[in-house]
Image (tube, rainbow, N blue to C red; front, side, top):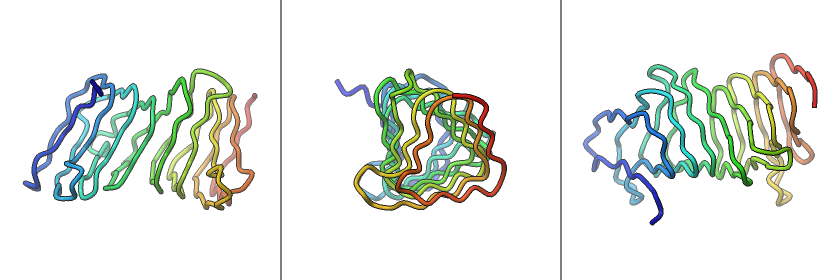
Length: 178
């Protein structure tokens, strides 16, 4: 049992409201590229493992800017509408953001200082990156130089690794500890 909940509305173009739940894995779209639907959160939502957005599907937190907490990988092959919402990465093991992604606010709050979130594509973060615990590795680990844009960074603890990445921060950078 993969424990994956699939949301697929077979290309009706309708907006689908996703119930607030705690999911193991969640996948939006059919995986075969025919889904043109938008899936929107109805409230705060926790995904213990992976979030997958398939091609042609749109996943949105922007309606009421509901927070989303992700314990596993983030795979975006379709669209993500971030609005003013916050995506928190809270894993107990290493996590990957497997493609380029746009977020509003991102919080890294993993279970230990050595647990990392690895960006494998260019990130645009329109709001604040908040480091609470864990490691945000922005260099892809394979030698590919990535470019990231962020509005602000607040580091209360944890590690931001920019060692092989270009990072443009347009606002405040606050290092409060760690």
